[in-house]
Image 1 (cartoon, helix red, strand yellow):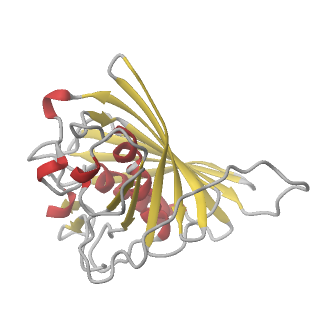
Image 2: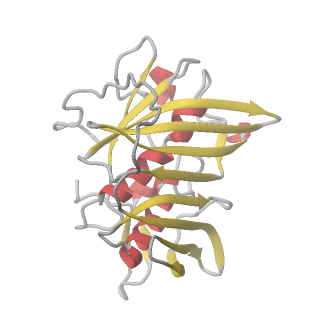
Length: 269
């Protein structure tokens, strides 16, 4: 799917120009969370990735609605050590920062001796989900099968999603890391989707990886959803076809004035 992308580059090759795939359901002039997160992750990976290190933790603060406007991602290295590298990114639109990110790279090594507890998993992805089909994610809730109708899963059951990744720029295949970020951003979808759609808008994403995922399709399964006073905290486990590879966590705030009801639409948040 390298012909599809969230952004193109301007004539100078320094500024991201949003495409229609970056548009959000939250508003006609808003960008969706996966696009903003992918832009930050793409810039950090491009500048600081190293085959000896795993991008083990990425936190993105989405504190201002990104608009359908030219976007620049500025990065800087904070720490470069033998076992840990830390870098930051700022997502800018004009003079306004709309998001910021921090990434931690950890050096690959052998595990310590002994065995540890691991949770049991029942996540089973759909077979050949995206063979000649659109890129809209598949969803599954307890008691229902995998479908590409998000609205068909507006209920109170535990939710899962299965999706492909989209490149940040045209002609550049989506890297496994950037793909993982897009999948992890769906933590909000699988935890906050209720009987009337989504009325919580996530203000951040934290993704933690033990390894880089494999394959062009990735999944996510809700683990917790805790709410009080219009604030939601959701966590999820990330999967490829080999099994779990990381976790996602989002905090979100109630936004009922812009409630998204997927029963009559398709699209991304």
